[in-house]
Length: 631
Image (cartoon, rainbow, N blue to C red; front, side):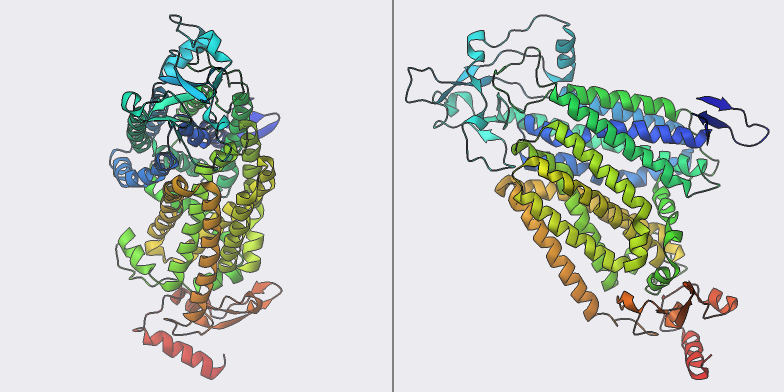
């Protein structure tokens, strides 16, 4: 790889294996690869890591779901900061360093392990298992790193004669409900347990450790604080990187998606490598409760270390990224990204969407409140409800699919393969998604995605062999890619220019904030009561109910607020050959292209498609004249 001096001919380029890339765009590719590799090496596994620390699904769900909510809460602050100080690169480096610091700090927090569970002596026929004092181990990530390297004083281990008898609670409970955790120590299971003397004790499934519940709760609260602070300070990183990428490909904005796809590649490769690595990291130096029998307990120190290394590399790459003098502030980047794909929508489908354009005062301030008022249309509310529902499913899957599969015997290697299939199908679908959107339209596509979720979640709930989930991961990637492409282009097309960025921000919040965030939080609360299988079934039923209910609402209110055309909310795509032009006027398709119904001057006047204002009688007169003259 070598750099080519393009000072005289234009931007600098880089040659990689004989292929020439613009240098700035190539740096962005590498940044996305390593940045999302850092996420893929740790964040998908945090739920099972928190599970191993003795936390409940409700606690783990809150720790994972609070991230997207904190991200959106921080956007106004960082937007004002970036607009005022114009120090984009410095802010990007600060956010990346913050991610490293707070991620490592999360790895430092672990509750102590005071006890192990061992088989009762053979002479004690009335007892199945007993508590035994645990060996001492170094606490937190720093201690585990020292142990792995053999640095520091020798720690006391569990008594050698007990190693053969140490067990985990999963061996004693053949009726364990998938998803429920941790398991509480009871007198019936552990003979020498005394709650008054030893306190409330819990043990994670597939682990030999026993924790005091107050220690787990303290660790939970500390990790929650670290996650909130870490997400607040690191949240500008992706919008700023997107801003630099848009500047790098300013001459050809459509290159953005080919650059951004390296993030998915980095995520899937890192997760796959971590999965294989974790299968060989199930041994701990000086483990407090070492067991001869295999358990699903893993040494996640590897994940925290690799996450930090990948983030550090992305930090070095960020020093080479460039920002324009008028670089977009982080809060506006998402809308510009959404705009880059609207020209992939077929003209007929685009016009059908624009026929539903929202009503908004063109002189109103471009704010979320103005956009929210415009989005109160019943049909748009239904559409956003569908998007949020799919986001809820994405949050549940991200937080608890690996958790569920681990209870069925799934290993990290399986999780890595699942990630490759998921991101591979998502990347493939991103290249072809508009073929389906242009064929079926935005509304039908969303109903199809809800139907796919019904099938996928029901099948996941029925599986007993964790490896059978692999085909469903392909369906997941297809569903999520289709949902986001359809939703972003639809909102961009129906939102008037003066509120478009705010409407796009609301969509992003509905899907990634409320959807994914509340999916993890609420999913964890319900799983804490009934387990993962039942939650997957309930979510499938919710998708079916909202798909059917939303379709019925659209049909029932199809003519509401429509002044010029009774077809404007008709979702029958079979009638695509007789589409509605601006303001509902009929147009024809000739040779696959739309013919103009108005002259250039008239089209310019009616650029605000579908924004019907009852006071605009001149527009109604023009329509009446068009109909009566037959022009």
